[in-house]
Length: 359
Image 1: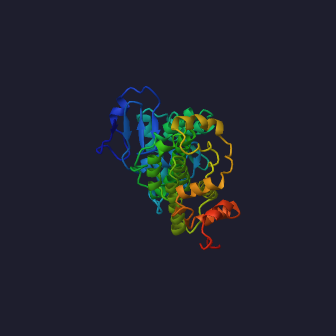
Image 2 (image 1 turned 60 degrees about the horizontal axis):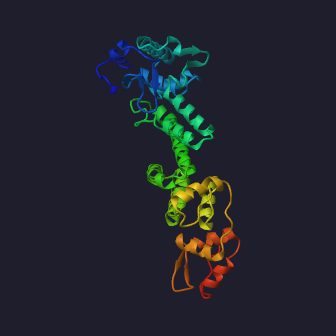
Image 3 (image 1 turned 180 degrees about the vertical axis):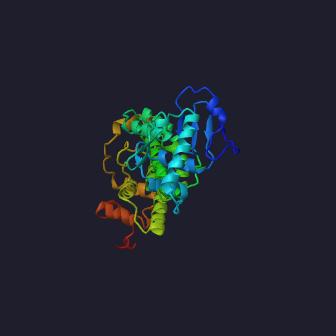
């Protein structure tokens, strides 16, 4: 249970953590509120200068952190007179706290060029997270890889460093941490896709995209999940949304991964790197059984009639009376990708219908 105590001095921790028997080495937490845990109780630090200093060192474990950077973290753009002496005093306060709560005195080391904090995966949740994610990426068993990625993601709690009042950290360091979190989210969704759980992940992927509307990697995974679930119109709608967002907010075009996936949806081909799509109407159990054998194999080109049906299902053509179709603007992209107008399609589309607009 998390505990706080507003009556303790600035930067201090409640006495009960020091008095409690410690079954393991004290552990620092930065993937949420800055805190120290002994494995039984977790104590959240009060906002203070020592807390800001500790957060800055924990975000650079094992690295030498310069006095100038630490001063900006603790005091902002206007450090006090005698800034190095004030910083030294702040470090001494941290060391006293560490000694009080069982943290080794040598955890913070003064070295040439600044200060260094020693930590490992057992004493810092950030390093534990990175270790789990690295193991997930290297693991060949998809179930184990997904379990490791979800374990890594479970270490994160909001608000991220909400009790650390440092503009320097929240402007430059916290966004980098958030990017690491999104890498874990992508790893989880990629694992779900590889296990054929595309339908189950759609809701979670939608929420992630809503929280990060300009993140291309998340949109790629959502589009693929929708496409594999037979929801081609929704997949193309998500592509149009991210395309509009990138153009409006950043003035850029979608990256190559998004463009390749859009063309795969338009062509009715399997996305790169994941199992080939099962034929329409394949029962879910049979589709999952067929997926491993199909991994990495390109599907044969569909006959012209199947292409037309795929375009209708994807919302690119609107079917009217027999043999008549209304062309959607996105059909132009399909024609460009194919290199020429499909000959079978020409037999079904009326001769008086205008061709797709030229580039």
